[in-house]
Amino acid sequence: SASALRSLLTGLQQQIIRQREEYEARLVSLEQRNEELQVEVVHLKTNLSQQRHWYQVVQAKIVESERARAA
Image (cartoon, rainbow, N blue to C red; front, side, top):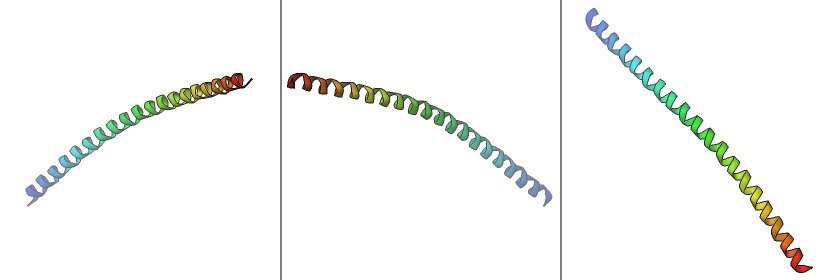
């Protein structure tokens, strides 16, 4: 009947609305996590750069120390 069809249609529309809201909430959550991870990547790259710099400094000091000992 028309009433049953309307009821079914209304139920489907509500389900679609709920699904859309869930997807939008999930999308916002994923975008936020993406931003957090991008910040973390920047931090890790900075940290790696500092570690490389200090490694080079230590290597230079070791070479300098070995040269001084050899002289």
